Image 1 (tube, rainbow, N blue to C red):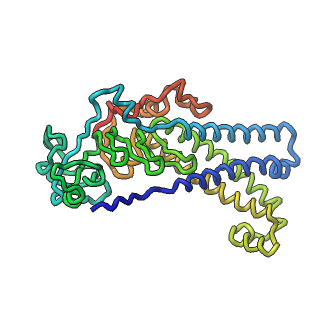
Image 2 (spheres, rainbow, N blue to C red):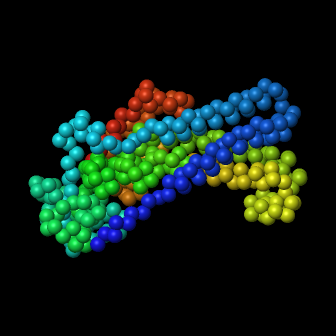
Length: 356
């Protein structure tokens, strides 16, 4: 029987990650301009130093503006708004099955069962149209979802029966108590269903979905460039200015903190070492996400489908898949956000060129 307990990811973790990210961004920008550049470019011309300042300001601007777009360009699915524009659509395509016939597959989200054992929830149709015996499904527990199975025993039914919906269908969300379109998933942090949900980004405090995925891709691109540029200068600064006044062991953060506690290392140098590790983390983090996201965009897939090996057939070309996320003239998005000028082709609800 369902206990009613439901785990929620702590929202405060988002705040910690956001503060960490922006503290790193602002710190290496300020320290770079005020302390690193004067040392590294001590013998450079004024015009050369100006160009490096411009590079820092441009990358900081691009990171900031795309962060704001990820944060405030929402991909939340609002059932009431959709129902008013498309009356009669969105009915669940779920099936009630015998729990004894359902077998967990080798991967999460995969179940194998005889199609003949399935009974449509809405009383119409059959399982004959599901030709495969292996289904990608969303599991719904009767008691948790609030479904009425007709026998009036509530929690007892939750122990005996499960409601299973094919992956590519309008499926009921047990948290929102509403049908959601294919590729939409519920976020336990945002507490809403997100269209074409990719993941919840703790460093922006919101979900990446159909409308802000373009900004997330551009965001990771500029973060990778900014951190790479900063790491190159940090290594140069460390060789010519940090190591001569410190021990080589001070580049190891635990030892740096220990020696700082005994007054052997200056507080500013501890900040530099901590900032260096943060830059390394954000560099690899952004590169991995950028490469992964661009691959998914060009293939027309989502992270859920890729990680669970859902056999999705995308009939669109690579250029169409890119326009589906970025809209027209997609390369210009890497210079300035264009979500209002050239909206993405995908609406997050209908997928005419996708089959499962």
